Length: 426
Image (cartoon, rainbow, N blue to C red; front, side):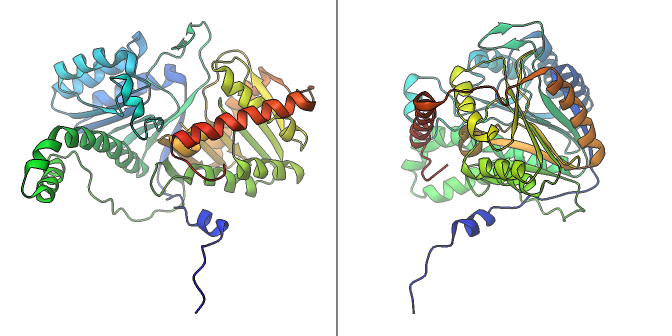
């Protein structure tokens, strides 16, 4: 009998979990914190049993203090409020946040805290919590790219007059329960890591460490901290929550983007601040443009991180030569991670199109198949494209300088991924 062979790459790609579509949802587009924060405060104030929140950045500026106040009020009236923040993105405000949560009873966890310089030597520290989730009573959720920071405030560049361009969705219906599972999973993961560190010595001294570890998990589940299995039945197709983790759902968001682009017949509009996709993603964009689909990319024109802009610009020649149209958004910082395909498929979320989001960070996107929602997002994107400068046809760096730029970006990306433990081709 011949020895078994490894499955082809396309079969391993297809083996990724498919989106779990749920019907009966109400999805509303929100632009920026100016639209989202008041809605979030109202939802938290109306919560009767539980509130879960996960975010990368949690600041103490005036617009987000209103959210913190709502969380405090909920905890004081007996609502179970559980918040998890990233240890790097929220590091400057962690002392303030810990004091507030301890005083009000909000249960705070920190994902991969960085309290000493040697924490960076721990495996996996380059894999950050980048999700932005909030869900109240399993019925109303907020998902998107908006951190808990004022639209006009940038941690690296200070305050500006114009708000950054960013989006989220308010979601009511069966999919809100899936958002709670995602938010509670990352809270529990952070909680267990901290609890494990605290009890490690005691477990090591115990004669029955496995029994004690199982007892710890049982205590967390009985306290409501550890979610049980979600056995909700499948619903008619309407919307889906896509989560990128470092387990089975490593490529779910990337795969959904590529599948939508491959199926496009008329138009693909994609807005993202950090753009350095892998080979399969770039190939899908090129082939769509070659078969007559109008493909437009909205990227940063006002730069916050120089290397990120350099990485995106290294791909301009390759994409523009195949008919992809590229625009740079200059009125303010671009932070939106959204796309619309053929006026029917739309996504809003936290995932950039770069190696950090597609291969390392924990991300969450909502995908909606609804003509009305897609039309609203398309309308707001059209306003952003109209305020942007098209770079298609503009002379880009060519010759040996262009090759040097592309080679340097590819080398840095490869080194970064190797440091994070990612192997194989991107």
